[in-house]
Image (cartoon, rainbow, N blue to C red; front, side, top):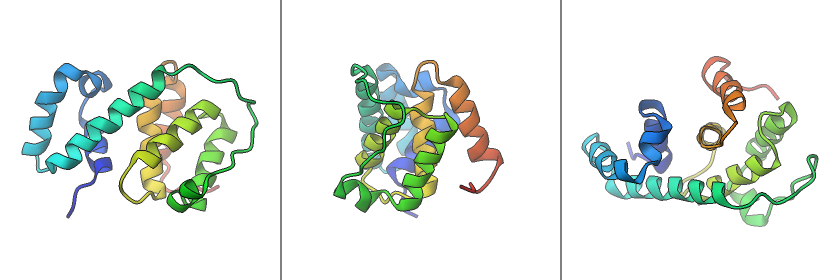
Amino acid sequence: MKETVLDVLMYLFENYQEGEFSDADNQDALREELVAAGFPDEEVSHAFSWLDGLAQQRQLPLIFSPSSATRCYTREETAKISTDCRGFLMYLEQLGIINVQMRELIIDRLMALKEEVDLERVKWVCLLVLINQPEAEEAFGHLEEMVYYQGEFKH
């Protein structure tokens, strides 16, 4: 089975604390462990680039946007992110689990994946984005419960 970038990210998420895989000093040791565990070096490199992109996006200034804006997706985004996936993001917004800025960050990180995006991958990207957001512990907890304990979403 071909391991993907998201497989590497999910492995990091499930087996390490956020500080362990986001700290540049630990990345070399983690890279060696991941390759030894059977993940392709190229996918491991892309996973760390993906995490670096997430960290860079977090440091950008917040841009004011209305709290109830309708998101118009680009042609590239609609080609990559299915209607079900976009509906799931809207569902999370309506529940108050993510806000407009988090939604944009999630979309950015989905577009940064080289692989196909399905609902399961969207859920994991949402978790990865939320775990990296300061003061999003409650939202992360709600989403984690939805992903791990409630099975398939009904929206």
